[in-house]
Image (cartoon, rainbow, N blue to C red; front, side, top):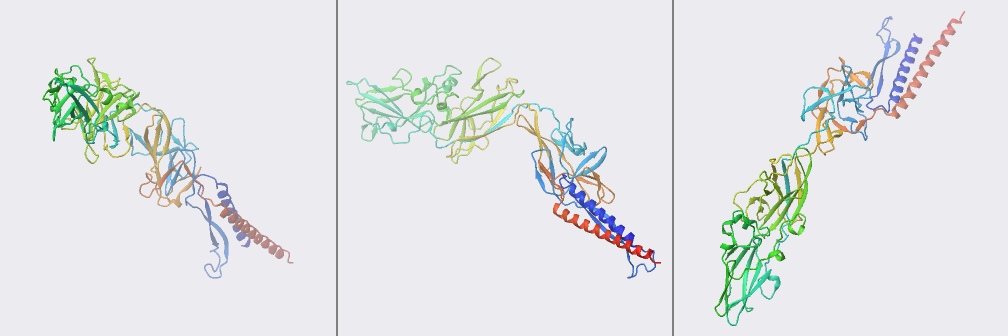
Length: 566
């Protein structure tokens, strides 16, 4: 009996040593789970007195080699296809038709684009079709096809326009003083027919409304003909812009007349109906001290002096920053994925929170329509209106700020050479007019064709592809499995396990749901072997082996003593 007891101890110690050695050998194996030996004592129940307190043990047996499934440290790598499970769960593998499970996430792509292990097993998951994740478990694959271009159909320009910026020319808020040039914008002088002639001077001071000036008059340098009686009552005049957009429209599409007077009245105009063609605009009449009148008008009297380019806002030119208040350019895409540069420019109109908007495509403001006509991309005199709190109230069409009462949706056509009828909607979002530097945030929904550039996984296990056109797409989602009893899993080699009756069937689901852990992309789970513990275990195994050998040696000596008795 002593020999058997010693031999059982030697065998158990050898198993302990082998298990410890295997742990040490796999201390750098990704996803490896260490094992421990579970011993049990033996009693010979066939002898008389079995079960009594006098029964002598028969040695030791190895009851189980149990694996410890505690998590290993997560080590980050530079490979996007390296994955680690942060929490519970196993990656699901298809090994020649058999489902296996692993914590080792050092995956690769094979020549057909399938996600595989180093041993060629396919990683299981849910592939996406047209961006929709499927519900059936299958081999996870990365499609390598290029993605087709998509034309821009809508864009958003969310801007802030600096409310501190001045109109061009700037509004003059100072009290008029003919002796102070800072209180008016420009002047004109004419002589009356009195004998002797008297000099009548008109002073034009830019008012709050766009292209509108308040007019003052002096006769021989005097503002009043008598105390409290000015030579000219309150008078305002409005001029067409540098492009003559109103005069060409008012004349039924005739010749534009830049800077032509289109309104004269006692107050600034408040609606488009008050504006007229130059010939229908009333003149400005001043009577000198001798009672002789002089009329400034466009119908035979003294011509009204216009601001011209010296004072008025110049014609819009995207290449001339002086012709607009704020502008920027960005990229849109036609149906073939070709890039086009869209420019958007805003011109402050007066002091009433109105900004005129201009659009260019590839530096051009106009396109040629089917009839051969040159048409602006954006309707002339399209304006953006803000309220007193600086919030956008809408976009309007009409001579600013005298737009129609209903806001209009901005859109342009003629910008896509592949489709002359392609419409591009423009949304100004929650644009504002605050006392902050002008800026904008641009977004659009088109893109060019793109080649696959790389793939990565997020924490929910989604397989995300990135393309050379800066687009991304969800290609699928990796699957995880869990078990009612992970200790019942059967090792299958290559750091994988298979289910058994003890483990129960696999519960398969998606990362970051239920009890499943999250995915760490670009990382691997290290072995959970603690080298220090294993070295101590080696000493224990060696000591036990030597001690059991001593038992065997002693039994042999005793036996020899008995044999030598005569």
